[in-house]
Image 1 (tube, rainbow, N blue to C red):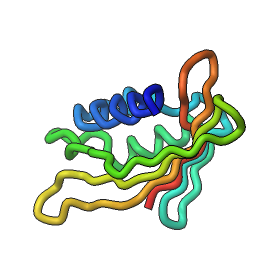
Image 2: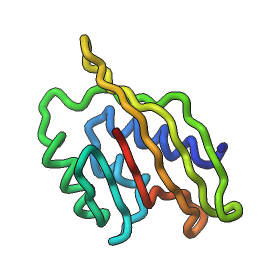
Image 3: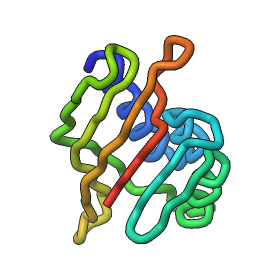
Length: 120
């Protein structure tokens, strides 16, 4: 998990800074990248970024701190693909919304990238 956790750590730090483009660097930049949340399915890196910008962009106060916990890794297809799941939390007292996520990552050009993200 030593190479994959830094992807999540980098995403959480970028999110908390309000840097959505930086957050998206954890995703594979391609048309097959998929994000699922609720009843919504968004496919394509640019479309996923657009979704985040529409929902969270332009906030003068920035974004609430994002943390991941209970992260568990399952290797699939050898050493170049992994299934990761856990919990996410946004620090927005008093409610502090939280949920679960499952992401599928592939190692491309020596870097781990998310190609599928299902968050609830």
